[in-house]
Amino acid sequence: MAGVHVSTHPLVAHHVVALRDPATKPSEFRRVVRQLTRLLGYEATGGLPARDVRAPTPLGEAAGRRVDDRIAIVPILRAGLGMADGLLEMIPDAEVWHVGLFRDERTLEPREYYNKLPRDVNAEVAIVVDPMLATGGSAVRTCEILRDAGVRRIIFVGLIASPQGVAALERGMPGVTIHVAAVDERLNDSGFIVPGLGDAGDRQFGTAARPH
Image (cartoon, rainbow, N blue to C red; front, side):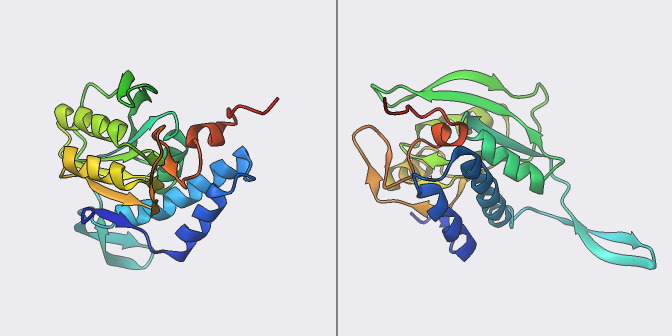
């Protein structure tokens, strides 16, 4: 898995433990997702190009650097929404483009139901966010949509990945940089990451089925 960057930051590891805990309530889960995304986003954007500038100060002028690239944050609906919020706190001038995909539970293949890219797709960088990189199908399809629209550089940021998901994204979109908090053991027969953290969308939005 040479193309995946797994964070070694102790705060990232700390927040992952909270997300895995079944006792973590949706409100707390959403808060931790935002915090974790900011940390991962910091690492994922470390290679963005910046130009040298002269910055005015109250006492003169200082040397500085400015990121001028047009950046798009692309959450895969619906679970990626909470991660998009975390990145927007870091990059408030970024655009947000939405792609909606659901996984066919029989075939485990992605099915597209929503695509809200702008008419003027000329962002230099797109950051695709989805908490779980499981089979990799949704991530690959989203990156294909962006590539076909003309986006030259794509970064994927996720929370938990499976080895199969990483391999699928590297194979399907070899130019995409992958940043995650952890790579877990495997997928189960239903396509869920083990040990994982359950369904990230349900846990964020409180829609998990309750026992009767």
